[in-house]
Amino acid sequence: MHFHILTLFPEMVMDGLNTSITGRAMKNGHITVEATNIRDFAENKHGHVDDYPYGGGAGMVMQPGPVYRAYEYVKNQIDERIKSSQVDSQVTSEENSMLENDGDFQKKPRVIYMTPQGKVFNQSIAEELAKEEDLVLLCGHYEGIDERVLEMIVTDNLSIGDYVLTGGELPAMVVIDAVSRLVPGVLNNDVSAEFETFHDNLLEYPQYTRPEEFMGRKVPEVLLSGHHKNIDAWRREQSLQRTKERRPDLLSD
Ligand code: ADE
Image (cartoon, rainbow, N blue to C red; front, side, top):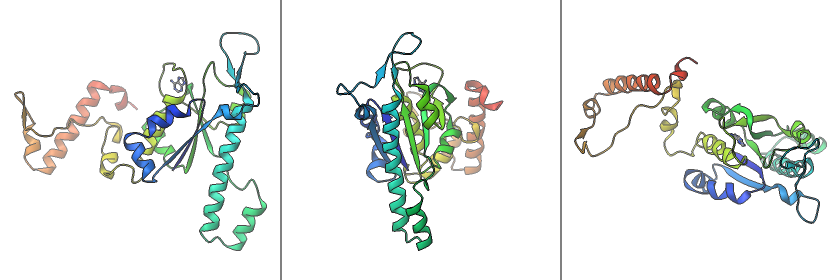
């Protein structure tokens, strides 16, 4: 899966994602992450990408031109990659001529604008996004981005919660982390993605490891019994109880 981030702070997202499991997934080739600096697409010598809002008001607004050109650059890269992989995989001559003749043959990529005005991100959205081959994440700064370019390129608006951050970079990293761990091969253990928190809309049961007793607290007896049916039943009961106590809203969905 290929993630493309449009941002004014590429080093911020790349430094964060190069670490830990997402970093390993990049090294192993399960995912690619590329951050494109919107400032590289400014057309003035100062590299300005923002200006005062029409109609007045506080703050600055990101201009549509640099955002649109950065998007076009990324879209071309995606198109080129898809074209070359199709040619590589021995397409018929008929399909080949279709690729050559129709510049618009590739569909528009999914472009996600990170904004507190978006739909609130959750596990089922992560699962849906994990089915895409390419995701473009657009990060805004200042008071936002000129509405016209958003109308032209954005397919989804996503928020990571009802609070306002200084920019879309942390939210984009959250989405990439949650989606990439669902990509086959990224986690060592497929089972852990399947039986974790939010599977079946329930919170995960409590986990224990050695030692069997820690500062007077013992591991629940049933987990030491080796009786798998009883263990499964106990875990299910714990999940339900936990969800009722901590997140009753999940049970009413
Ligand atoms: N940009 C600023 N705040 C945000 C939020 N809560 N979610 C997504 N993008 C944002």
